[in-house]
Length: 383
Ligand SMILES: [Zn+2]
Image (cartoon, rainbow, N blue to C red; front, side, top):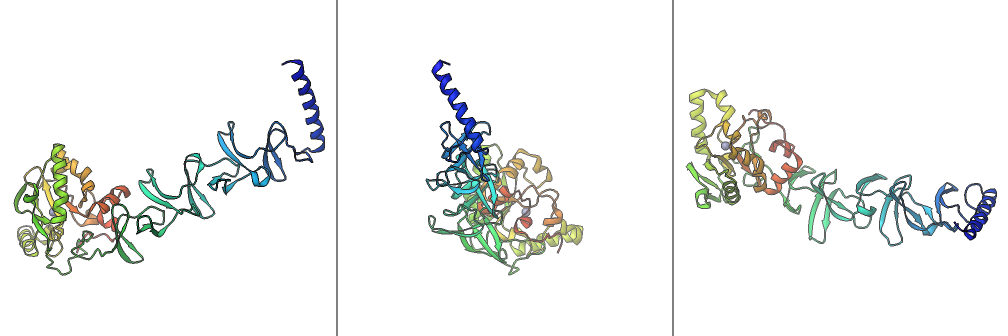
């Protein structure tokens, strides 16, 4: 430090000392501030070295955070929700530190602060929730309920937690279906036998009981090996299975279709045969009564790599590959292990049901194990 600097430093110390006598709070009567953070009239300000108030954005290393000093209010530090001079919206904590990379709950609304603290607007994918959210473009608040998005020219629905709906949901007592991109496809009914969303179990028989699907195809014509005479599937299920079979085969997890569509009459014969051999109580644990079998939808498929249906299929590579990947093609493992009390059936590692990729994706992301639970329907352990 040279003599000249020492002189100015002495003068500065004297000046600061004099200011301190006049204004013990850190600000002089002329509006000059001591350097650094100053608490004046219940608000925080930040003094520059020349005594003026810092305006705009300030990064404070000691807090590892950004602060906003409002130019419209002589540099007053802002907290809560505000907009800077560019119109961008932000939220700072009560200590002024800007919130980044986080959901924020403020004033009974949710917001999402991105990198740099910018509050998100529009669609937001949150990998932590594996779901899409929507932040209102003007208020930046998270939206729940129905949303019309003019960019897609479509309706969407955001659940009470903000997550965008996929697949089938009942809203206000009315069923609706949503595509894999969340677009509302229209009203649906899980009781509609020809819907990919139909729920068939011991409490939900077909209506009519002898329903027959109209668009059945022979799975062999889709390149799927068929073992047996029940190799028909609905065309939408067959198309999806064609792709699944191709990818499974490429992964060394090939399979064959043992039983797809079964008519009411076929199921009657099967079920009555089991009843005659093992009694009705035993038959009910593994065979559906006619009019109650998912196979009557044309959307259910018993598939195996073992030629026949064994529980050990679940331990094979093909069984494991299908259990882990079938959702990508719109299929779900319909009777998982340990859920007899919900589905009404013992573990069937071979029985897959086509529900469409929107529903299978929603179930996978949401961690739902059974279709009953996903639909919010009561367990169906018995008739
Ligand atoms: Zn089956």
